[in-house]
Image 1 (cartoon, rainbow, N blue to C red):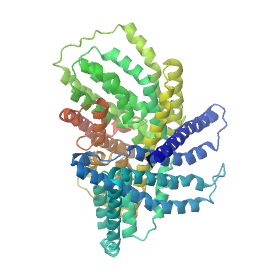
Image 2: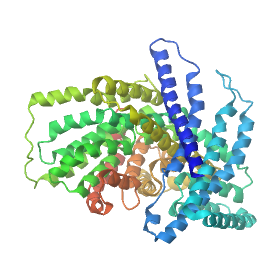
Image 3: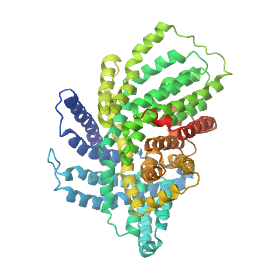
Image 4: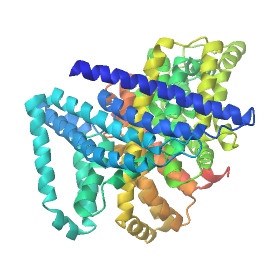
Length: 604
């Protein structure tokens, strides 16, 4: 079984890697045809969209096999080995339950869509949505193998039996649930989700299981609606920017663009007290504008800066704390995946969000720099001599292609030259050419691994978007959204009270659910409330994304904090005590952005 699964996964990884390359080629060809030859390819978006769903589902299966789906591992990690093994068994069993429940409706949905033909290429839409069936089937096989491999045949079957008995017992209470009304929302979307997340079920599967359970046990709505909502949530063309920007972020590290940028900043600031800490902050600001992936940002910067910072006496805990805080600060720097996602699910202008996120992030960077300044006042002067102007100029010329890229990406989207999806392909081609011909760094042997990592991370994100979209629809159908708008609109304090509650809520949600799931699930519910209070959507979006970033990088639950510790190879215990000052000044920056709309709307 293990050998068979490895062979299957290699085939799936190869296919997913090919799909990433094909997507880049199709979309870049569309840009060239439209802007260079003035002959648009009417079929390019259609074909790219069809292949996109296959990439998302294959990537989700790869992420499950590699254990890379987003989940809360903190509580399980604190448990004793026996309890941890039990939690893992039931987590895998719940994953199996979810994919078993959607395979049938996904097959029915595929058959329903089969007669629907695409406008330009006229191929059946069933070929596209068959990806849902194939992906669910693959995930079922992988989850079953993980369950049996981790718990043994007897333990795995026991976990499945207990889960099935629990489901049967709940089904007997169907009439009771029907009488409970909206209290069911608390049972399923708070209680069941919290239980699933606590035992280590990946967030996407926790959302999906809760939604299916709610619909099956408390309504008469067919479960097929979950599949159609997942398709709608995952198939938006703007979301194709997610895998492409992830690919771009991984490429900038491989091709040397990130290293060139850091060398220039170190030459410019390395001789002052705390100079490399300033370099870290500025580098995170600039690299975030290229990659859009916080994990890629930190992985590109930390290995280049940490050895020298340690040599100059910086404490490991301080380094990781500043790295994590810089990640939180950079959440709104375009082309942030969170901004792209929130624009997709709420309908807010992505170009407007790209414009609005620049200055608030700069305010956060300035706040972190102020803390670094006060911390470095008592340090001895830097032992590194100031570089001559000619050497700084040389490093600037070397780094110029890297420094130009974030501004190029932002300008192309804001000025309407390319969409957020298209500009990512332009960035990929730009980085590839720069790596090959300018920096002479292109490790072809790493390309396959980068493509597979792109597919895996993209699948993990997009499956969350799909299941959270279905969950959000179920909440809306229940009337919860209308009740929430009415409650918030009547909240004391008006706009100030609403902002205070939103900041507190998204700090917590960003910590527990991670950023993108929190935004997808609660963004569509809270934005109507913001409109009811006459709050500009772009202003509100920037505030909640910044607040979510604080939660994402805040211990003890924020997964971004632990990612920073892993990248910096530092124990979380060494960084927890140092991070609170940084997060505190970032919170003040968030409050300032909420209080002064001009900071996010001044360029509109």
